[in-house]
Image 1: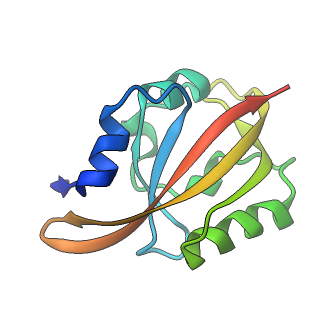
Image 2: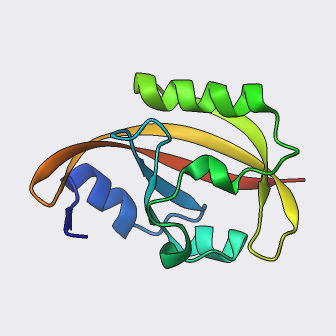
Length: 126
């Protein structure tokens, strides 16, 4: 996939973000994953190849409150900042309480076509 990151998003991806970060596309109603950082991989056990093109909500467990997932999806769709908590799965099947902050990130180019994106900053809650 040929992705041209916007300068603002590229700066966010290049700097040492100490929290797990997931970039999702607003071009699909299920907000598919375009990129994850190393901290996200360490926290979840999933690497980019495991999750690219999959809806971010697939990482949420059956224990996740669907109203919380819908609230986060609503913020992503509206291009608004928001925060919420969901139960998420690791690759090994274990669960953790995941604090998610939605950060609207503007537009990037994928294969020459514009694509609106959002960043999901994650943090494992105790």
